[in-house]
Length: 258
Image (cartoon, rainbow, N blue to C red; front, top):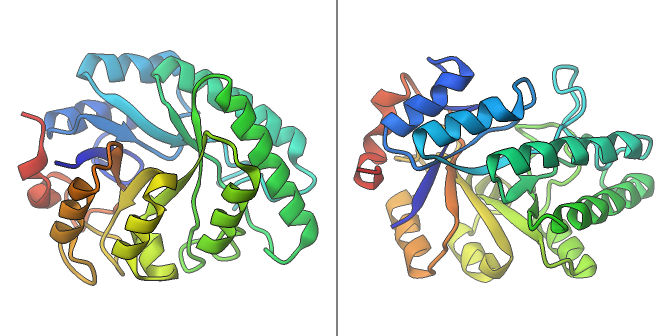
């Protein structure tokens, strides 16, 4: 049976951020993820995880000025110093929370720009090597440009080529079903083919990015495939509830922690 992590940046918005840990546990989740924890001290996050018996499935390294439109630093040639500082900051949170997977956002840049491509390769290699010293996987994720216009890593072949070239054992693919369907389709075959490289899975309906209970994708079938392939990681619920979070959890109740 798949194991699900509530994404607290998307779900349980009816609660303040720290109270979302309690709400997710009460709803039956055994793990959480979110975009960024950096507005709160590492020990505050750790305390909420411990209080509720939750695993920390994933979070992102600092993205730069998110409010100002930055969506990562890795592909920005003049921001490597900031990138190095962001790795150190993320590691402090990973150590406090027990997180074993972190996602590095690429940033807004043109993939054909050689300076951006070189910067991205350098940043991914540096971050993976630093995280690897602590037994932590680095994840990279192709994201569609409808959701993030101008995003650098918007193509699976590009991500797979970099993973193959760098050959770092802790560099993994973040397989977001929502983004995969929009970018390339062929979700099930891709999951079968890429499973050895996949470090984390995320879900949402397509095209609305709501609960995984309808629209283009047959999620009950995909959940069965996750079981058949013995994927052992968490499945992150990175979706925006149509209404109240709890009202939309009908799809999840068969999987809830008792």
